[in-house]
Length: 175
Image 1 (cartoon, one colour):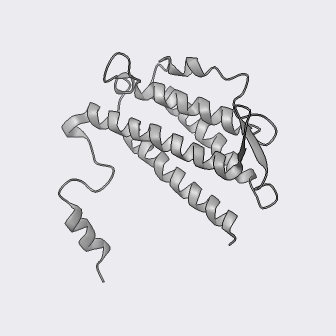
Image 2: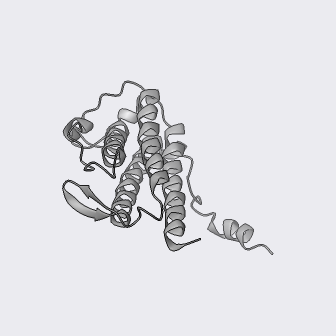
Image 3: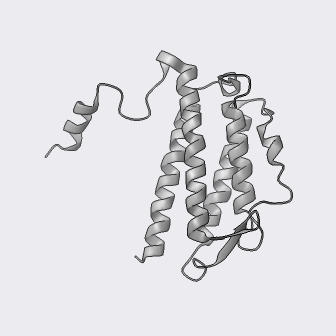
């Protein structure tokens, strides 16, 4: 496997890992939960998902031939809480991720070195992918924190629960 293929494989693994954190958070929430805000000027989970989906669709639709900031994107409207249900939010979540994953499948040895643009700024494929991985993980961290805050003591940990590291490591390092 060449370095480009190895990078794309690693990137996909990390993106799928972060997406699964969002997915596992959503399972714990109901329709009302996705609209909860920590403060009046904050964003709800529904708004963060709307922004992520809008970003993914803009960045990765026709990314080789068009700027990643599409003329049809209305970024400001992404921060308006318009999803009525969790189901509606999840449809947008999946649509954004599917657009991103489909775009990754278009990248190969012949076009990996190609320059693309985001807001009229040139980016290598590597720069664009790293930029998006950081952006997605940043917002998914917000989603998880909001979910944990909403659920409080009813939150089901998405990683090693507090006080269980030793037991987890015993299993992992078992001969």
